[in-house]
Structures are given as C-alpha cells and as structure tokens.
Image (tube, rainbow, N blue to C red; front, side, top):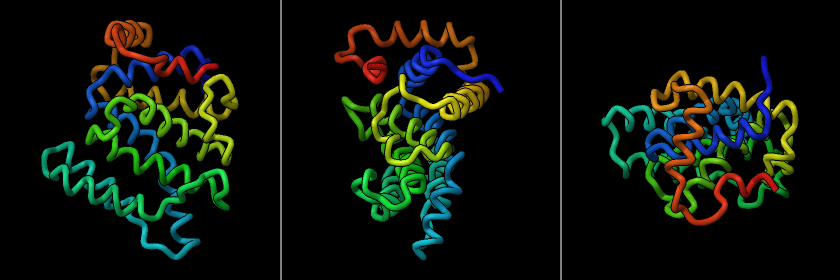
Length: 197
C-alpha cells in the first residue's frame, strides 16, 4: 500500500474540513471505526460496558434521519463519561485515543466545535492514526510533520476509504484540495497547515 506524504495528508484534511459537518463526521467515523476494537479492548480490561456500538448505530441512524440530535448527543456523552481527561498520563493511551476519536464523531456531526471544528476533525483522525499505530501519548502532539510511516500509511487507507464513500471527495485529490483552498479563503487562523510546524 502506498504511503501518503505530509503534503498529501494536509490536502486531504483541508478537503475534509471544507465539507459540511455531516460529511466531516462521516470521514471521522471512517477513521474511528478502524480503532473501535482498541476502545472495546480497553472497556473489557476495565470491565466497563462499551457504549461505542450504540454510538455508531445511533450515528448511522442519524445519517438516515432516524435519530435526533439529542439522542446522538446522549450517546456521545455516555462514551465521553468513560474517557480519561489527560491522555498523556493514561495507562492505555491507544484505547483512550480510540475512545476520543469515536466520541468526536458526535461532536463533529452536531457542529459542537464551532470555530475550532477543523481542529476537532484533524485531532480525531490523527488520534485514530496514533491509536492504531501504537504511538501512545505522543499522538497528542498533533504534528503532521512528525507522523510515523505507519501513521501515514493509516492515513492513506483512511483517505482512500473516505474518497470512495463520500461523493464530494470522489474527485481527484488535487481537485479536492483546490475545493478546500477555495472554501478556506477568508477563514481566520492557520487551520490544518498550522499542524505542520
């Protein structure tokens, strides 16, 4: 499998962040589903009832118009109640990172990020990559230029899956990047590019 470059990862994040919150959440869900098993293993180790299957089911129902915003928010709150506040000191950082990626599906879908929505999208996807690749608490540093080869490979697979499932991303990656650049004009801050340095 090919490995994404940092520039390609940056363009992919920018393309996703240019989408509606609904489509952003679908892209985050693609990454989070890849690490749900790590969260489930954490719940089993800690003897906790795993709320992730319910959250994912409610998210699917929400996409289909069969779940209210309040029900989706409640599912996210149940999962969040089990998450560690400080990932840097957690004894199971991969499981915790996976949990936060799952939780962020709801936050993104419901537009709870407001002016930091793009940061939440990138954080959730990078947490999923860090969790799957066993990076541990270092994944909280959120630096695209410090991603491991394994994390870039994870992002390559995630981006391929997003492009196949989200119709607005089915254009070539360069076209998607151009769309993101056009949508980004006038936004304040560095956005995703700020994660590169």
